[in-house]
Image (spheres, helix red, strand yellow):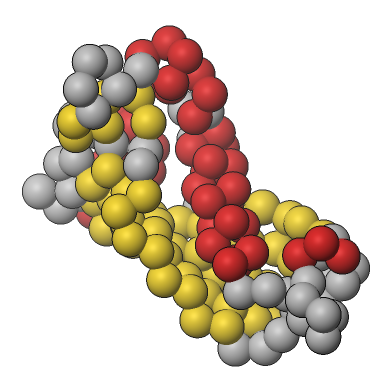
Length: 137
């Protein structure tokens, strides 16, 4: 699990002052990369040292309460499902200890060496993601 804190910027809102919905997906993306860094595998190093990336396959977000300019938000992320080459990561958006939105992403572990293709998630990273006892094949 990781925690990613952000403050809503004016540019994140629409003319009504409410956060424009695609920003939740942007923040989920940022939270995923924060998660990877928190478990010791920053995306920048994965790509620069191993040509590995985590392309997005699916994304969904349900918004329960609006967010506004200068709201402080915490995104709590954890891996829900882990397969050989794919993982599903959950993102809960909190404002003042209340869940205001929740979503998930499904991402592939992929090599960018030559043609883009999926690659098995290394066992040591799988263990860091969710713990060895809850890994699915």
